[in-house]
Image (tube, rainbow, N blue to C red; front, side):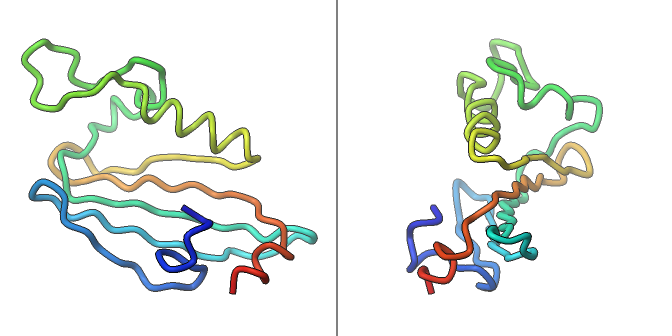
Length: 123
């Protein structure tokens, strides 16, 4: 995602995409520097099904799905968020989620350090 100069750049305004009737917003911001790094915050938000605050602690666990029933409306293995968390952490970053509850959408944010020279070279 960070290597695609045409899609997202630091300071770029939020953009939106439509996906299966929901809107997904993403934003890339430069938070500050602690030489030789700059810190980038990437946010992805949607207006989808949301997450109950009581389930928030579970969503980054492998094979975990908030709705574990066989009749659930959304498919998946429950690995996407746990893999994302691991990748962010391997790059020295931090990830978290925010939601005001079911039916209220969710926002996922992560912060990554990026070498200043790489950030400056990307334009």
